[in-house]
Amino acid sequence: MSVFTELQADDPGSDVTEIESLCFNCGENGITKLLLTKIPFYKEIILMSFECEHCGFKNNEIQSGDKIQEKGHIFTCSIASRKDMNRQVIKSDYATIKIPEIDFEIPPSKRGEITTVEGIVTRCISSLEQDQPVRKNLDPEGAAQIDAFIQVLIEKKNLQSSFSIVIEDPSGNSFVENLNAPHPDPALTESQFLRNKEQNHLVGIFEEELKQIAEEEEEENKGKENDESKEKNENEPFNVEDEVLHFGTNCSNCNAPCETNMKVTSIPFFKEVIIMATNCDGCGHRTNEVKSGSGISEKGIEITLRVTDPIDMSRDVLKSETCALKIPELDFEVGAGTLGGKFTTLEGLLVAMKEQLSERNPLICGDSSSSELKDRMREFTDKMDDVITGKTLGVHIILDDPAGNSYLQNVYAPEDDPEIKIVHYVRDFEQNDELGLNDLKVENYEEDN
Image 1 (tube, rainbow, N blue to C red):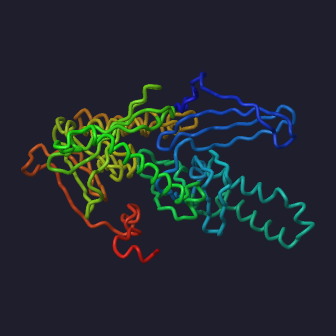
Image 2: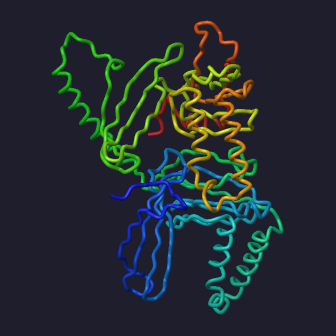
């Protein structure tokens, strides 16, 4: 059985699956090759390559092997140099590409691909030029307008003027390379949005089907609860914090059926959280995740720790899936969603961040990455190691969570910790929008029906 493995340039034993399939060019049978792989900071993907030995037709594309994300993603990138034109781009089946300066839009093509910004512009030019000879005979005026527009695209490709490119993906499975990794890229911004009904239908999500599935699951759970309640002693109260709950799921690595354990627990001087752990017997893959058990707080929270002793690395930390992490002294910042929710020590969190950035990122460690980027990453990981081992003190580690569901252990509790600064702040409109609060209606909601 094929599984999603990390793509290694020097790995000769990649698990490539070959399937005989129909060639749409000549009608004979050709060979389709499938490779299941992973890209850190992106998703699991399926690389497909088709070749027909009869007519020589070749084709390749990419499909996401991961689920549709909870929110859509919008990437906006300013293109001003040749380096920007060489940015790697992963475009999913559902992504729309726009160049606002020339009012140009490429609709979803149902064909994912790995390319560059230059590759996107070049393909647009080729597509427009393809039928120009026929168009000049049938519609000379329209052909002249397209020729003029092609010239504008050529000027953009040659960087005669700067421009921006916007990739809007309701599935959340597209990606644009950060050229300044591991630091934030000033030319690249990423935001999330809630899909509307039309976008849900585009990615294959239908509310009626989901409602029906939810109702069936609810009835099934009620039946199980009734059976379990009969077995329990009626005089013995049920406490969910004393129980480890189990439910079936599929392994995120090999998709084999496995079991997830869920435990509700309370963190002293904080709040109730839900810890979920999955262990796959098929491939040995293990995952764990932490979610808040009390919803979104009224205010966001920013926790700043000044590291003054190596023992600070042993502090417990709860990083929710909405929490961003910053280390100003290293000019380091990772956005919300990286690593998901984790309950670990500060050392464990920083080690996991370092591994994601350097050791398992083919966009940096692969053959296509530049030596400058590798040197910059090596220099950064050395600085991160000094912080983790306690050689570098005095740095500030900042947890910024708009949902207010992150936590850092206070070793002086219940008294104030002199090295921790906690600020509760009012979220702005954009933060509320990313959390889905602007569209949340809790009063008179029946009026919409």
